[in-house]
Image (cartoon, rainbow, N blue to C red; front, side, top):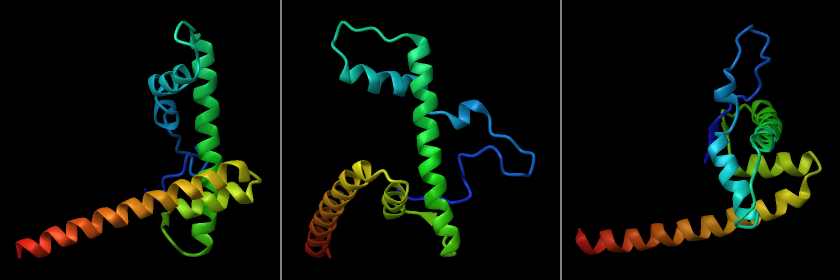
Length: 127
């Protein structure tokens, strides 16, 4: 899940270009769906609540990504990795988010390694 460092969420790049709001914000339908998952089945969510959460979540992602991007630029790398995002979360004092993300990435890498090994064994049998 690497992202190009040049694709910053900030629309203040000094060059006068601006990013359209629809490109800067998470899709509101997705935000609403995530919000609905945690609420009781009969609960309703106002449009204002969805828009507020959309703005906050999008800003949070931009904030963390910007910190990770700055690290990559200093290291002369063009790709932001999951490890960079974990580092950024910890650097910003968001350890409560960084640690679960690190655990998730570790499990994901283990599963991907298992899949790669299985695929390799299957291909050896074919060739």
